Image 1 (cartoon, helix red, strand yellow):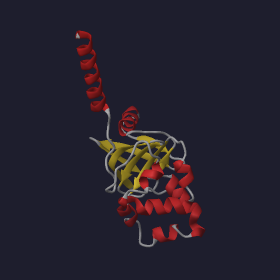
Image 2 (cartoon, helix red, strand yellow):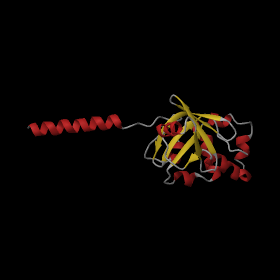
Image 3 (cartoon, helix red, strand yellow):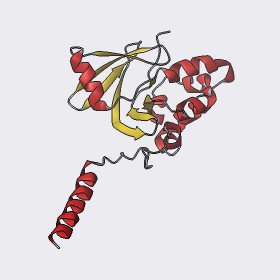
Image 4 (spheres, one colour):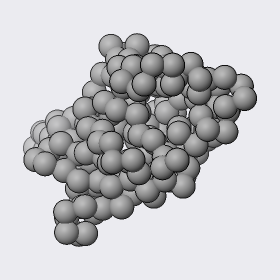
Length: 184
């Protein structure tokens, strides 16, 4: 009888502890994000990322970002794309500009699974600013203030991470408020 009570109490504690440590993904664009789905499978459900999804499709990057990774994607919102000069998105989406679109998009992708705490640790280790090489050949500069991570692109434009640590089966998404651009 005592053994049964101890086992029951131990099992209850394990379930409670497991639940306490299981981090839930934040909602993005009004949609739940599932850690067992890929970056693309989750992104298509976000109402805030329809422009990004269309651009990824136009650039032919769906298969790549559905692959095993790991990837860290700094995902600009629709509003971030709207902040670009008028006509820029439409121009990038033209078939003849696929190479430039691919370059812009891959400057948002890092070949690693970097959660916010890891990024802040790298910034600390580098004395306050950490270079972040992307798969597109761009180098972003990461900094942070409190819990807010900022990324500066090669043109000196700064994007802020507005939703961090959206865990994916093949990496992580950090939602950002500006489009990062390569040096031209």
